[in-house]
Length: 103
Image: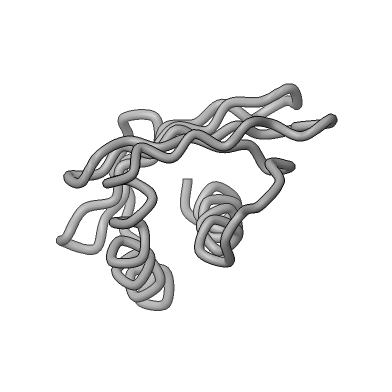
């Protein structure tokens, strides 16, 4: 998945792997167990928006935009997109945590 945005440090590409690691802008890092479990749960939940090729428009003041590529398809949204599901908000929180604590 790729996150881009209007603030410093916004642009990042994260590629989680089944072996408990994540690539942050190409650099491999170990994920702590809680973040691995969250990634596994999110992967299942992201199948539906990916299969539907969801494209949520940005709201009036986006800071981050997300493009998520999965085996089921690709979808995109912004942090202020209206009608976000709980899963999309959880993905945002996971990304923030990984960027701050792992990358």
